[in-house]
Structure formats: C-alpha cells, structure tokens
Amino acid sequence: MTVAQQIITIGLCVIGTMATRFLPFLVFKSDKPVPKYIDYLGKALPASIFGMLVVYCMKDVSILGGSHGLPEFIAIAVVIILHLWRKNMLLSVAGGTVCYMLLVQFVF
Amino acid sequence: MRKNRIVKALLFAFPKTIPIFAGFWFLGFSYGVLMNVNGFSFVYPMLMSMTIFGGSLEFVAASMLLSTFAPLQTLLAALMIQARHLFYGISMLEKYKDTGWKKPYLIFGMCDESFSINYSTEIPDDIDKGWFMFFVTLLNRVYWVTGSTLGGIIGGLIKFNTYGLSFVMTAMFVVIFLDQWLKEKQHISSCVGLSASVLCLIVFGAENFMIPTMICITLILTLLRKPIERKDSEDKQ
Image 1 (spheres, rainbow over the protein chains, first blue to last red):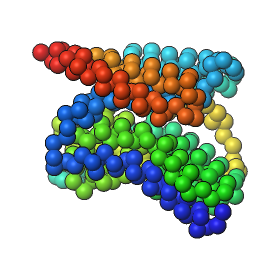
Image 2 (image 1 turned 180 degrees about the vertical axis):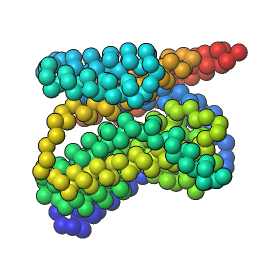
Image 3 (image 1 turned 45 degrees about the vertical axis):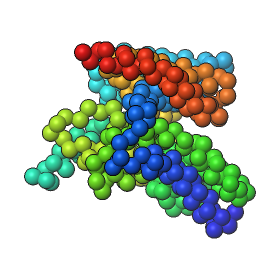
C-alpha cells in the first residue's frame, strides 16, 4: 500500500465512524421535537445496550474449550458481589480485575 | 465563578473515568505495540487514535493497512463495526441537547465508554452537565491517544505482566449494567439486550453478531413498546 492509499484507508475508517456517530443528531435536529417512537427508543435502548456491551466484551470467551469461561464468570460474580456490597464503582472494577488477573495468571 | 464551575465538573468527572484510564492505557498501549511490531511509526497509532477513536475498528484497520488497498471493503467494515454508535446517538439526543459548542465534540468523541458514563451518571445539580460530559469525553480520548502513542514509541521493548488487565473494561460494563438494573423500574429492556446478544453471538459468531443483535433489539423493543411504557409510567404514580 502506498502512503496515499494508507491515508485513504484511514480516512474511510474516520468517515465510517463519524457517519455512525453524527447521523442520529443530523436526522433529529434539536430545534424540532423528536418523534415519539425515537424518543421511546432513546429511553428503552440504553438498558439493552449495556447488556449488549457486557456480551460484546465476552464475545471471544470460549465456553466449550479452554477454561470454559470460568475465570470470566467467577470475576464477574466478584464484581457483582462487591458492587452490591459497597456500591463503589472503582472498588468493584478493581476487585474484579485483580481477581481475573490472578485467576488467568496462576489458576487457569 | 465560571472557572470554579469548570474545575468542579472536571473533579467530578475524573474519578468516573479511572477504570477507563486503566483499560484504555492497556488496550491503547497494546494497539500501539501491535502497530510498532508491524513496522509502522508511532505517528500511525497516534493519528488513528486521534481521528478514528474507536478501539475495535483501529485493530481491524491495522490489518487492513497490511493487506491490499480495498476502499469499499474498508468503508463497509468501518460502518458495520461502528454501527452501535447509532444507538448511542439515539439515546443521547436529549442529554446532548443544549450543550452549545461542546455538542459536536461530544458526538465526535462518543465511544462505548464515554456514552456509558455520560448516560448513566447521575449528575448533581451543582455540577455543570455540559462540562461534565465534555471532560469525560476529553479524558477518555486523552487516555486512548497517549496509550497508543506510547505503545507505538516503546513497542515490544518492555514487557509487563499485565495479562488479563483488559478485563477492566468488562468489569466496568458489568457495573454499569448492574447500576442500571438496580435503578430501572422494569427489566424488560435489560433482559432483551442480554438475551438477544447471547442468542445472536451463538447463531452468527463473534465476528458478525453485532448488526443482527442491534436489529433484534430494535424489533423486540418496538414490539414491546406498550408494556414497557405502561410499566415505566405505572411505577411513577
């Protein structure tokens, strides 16, 4: 690939990304009321999205092979327990991550 | 007075971004190292992180740069990988309203993590919402760009025992999901998100499941609009 082709490739990635980020705001301008259906989606979607993002993070975990996703599920359980207990985001995230690192480095 | 408001928003925003700091430095660094190992100058990861600012696409773009020039394929891949931002935009239409000159920047820098923090944080009345969201977006971007630039400069020279650190992002999304779960009046949408993603992941595989998942979620939420709206308004009374 020449430098010009590299620049075009990167540029297309930027255009693709920005299209998906800006499109909703360009279609539904803030000076006009948003259609009721879109307003509903805007309120109902985030809960689904957060679920989707959790699964997205786990997409490469293989349940059938390797460690069967055990370190992931144990660490997630630790995150949930810590969070229900202290409701402190930093503590839950740090605790879960340390637990996961110990599990994958020393146990599995 | 005005300066004070800005500093206050920054001080409120920073702690919320610490998990992202760890995650982005680690992932950004890995990405920079990958580029370095593949023979690219650190300028590439730096500029790509500044302009694209999307982790998964940047990793894919690294392999695109190494193969033959295929512009249409590149654009399609970018649109498919980044399509989930459409959901973020629809969800942030209301919150990004009235943010003035900051709005284009907030949209430009709207990654998974900035969206999640900006959407889910309950901002106290004495904190300026626009500045808070601005700093969350800016800080996350700074973490990613500095991490990937450093990785590009240092390359494979040093090795840390950081195996497993990328779990920090998973942990953060689990916490955000849990907070949403504890806060919401009905769990329909949360359950739809989880189950549709898992089903599509099984059916379509890790590489291709996001677009089918988004279509499923939109369809199911559209079908369940009446019960969801009813439950949400019931509990308000």
